[in-house]
Length: 197
Length: 197
DNA sequence: GGAGTTATGTTGACGGTGTCAAGATTGTTC
DNA sequence: GAACAATCTTGACACCGTCAACATAACTCC
Image (cartoon, rainbow over all chains, first blue to last red; front, side, top):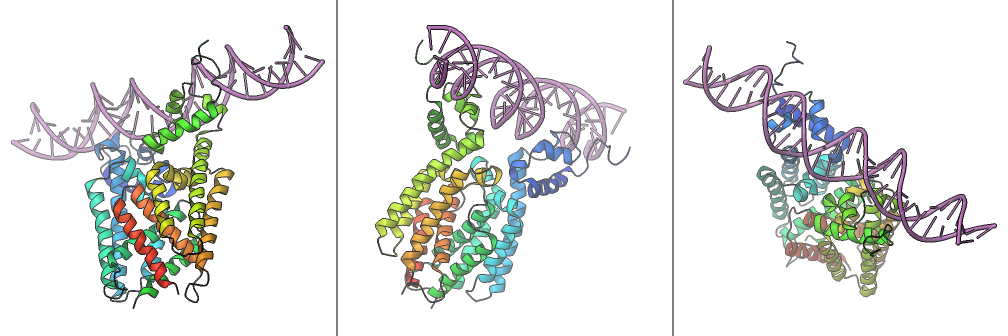
């Protein structure tokens, strides 16, 4: 019995995740069907159901992995910033992740999972955690340097929203082109920096 | 022949748009199928194809209408601002539109049309126009009041990205709750205002 | 007013999707 | 080796968008 023709795949769980990720990169969420995926993995249509409850669960697992990557980037950049409130480098790295992995970013933050679907507890956990870490990390950097009456947490949330908004506008193919995006983000950071004492 | 049983509907084009909009509000883009829509309009599955080239065209028409509404709000608020750079009221109105019409907002800016689909020329036109007007209007308000070396257009783009990002985060059901959203946006506006001379 | 043309509506069909049910095969455990 | 669980299979169902072919109504022109 050859290795390709045996009844049990042997490592279908990981194969599915890996193949799903490349299929996601190639065709986006819309092009990611379980049937295509199964075919690519050389397995019947319903085989994936023995490893993931349904499509939503598979996509959540995919997004959870991507969040772990992003979280790692965030942590590295916050550490690299040391005690300096200059988050320019951080922003650049964030934008790079989003533009280099647009379909993953879309899956991580898109409504496919958060609105239409049902985000798994693990996904929720890693997503909230990465945001919390960012917000707390940044607000620690800004603490005491902002004008009176300015909540550093709010500024952190606003900056996140700005970056995220830029990513979405670009990824969704609407307004800003990529070079503009960096310029806009630099302007936004400069605005925050200018407000520091 | 009763009014309900006649062969020709009489006003199917508008009926479809109207029914599609309520279906959109009720169930989101994912729940909006042409077959449901046709049934609601009391017509066969393929009748809509005589009024819209395909589903994409219908959704574009829907989004175009919504953009016209948003554009109207933007214009009104910019006029109301007069010569003052305080865009707090503007932001509030924008957020209101997005939170009161979340599914429409999603359709307007989401990848359904801009990435997966093919935005019609009319949609592109009204979308770009509303953004251009906002950016130009706001940068006119900020002109000459910003610190040296600050491009008002970039600030306008950044502020749009911030608002849009907040709307997406909220609409997609991710991070910020509605009351936080206003607080964050206020903080962002305050940051811009603080940079003015 | 009748004939021809266009607009509008219909049913039937095709390939695609996610997912459930029932059965086949393999691995694991006593 | 028997019993059981894990894994994989085919078959089926209900959706979906859309095309082709046909039916009916409205509109136009002589």
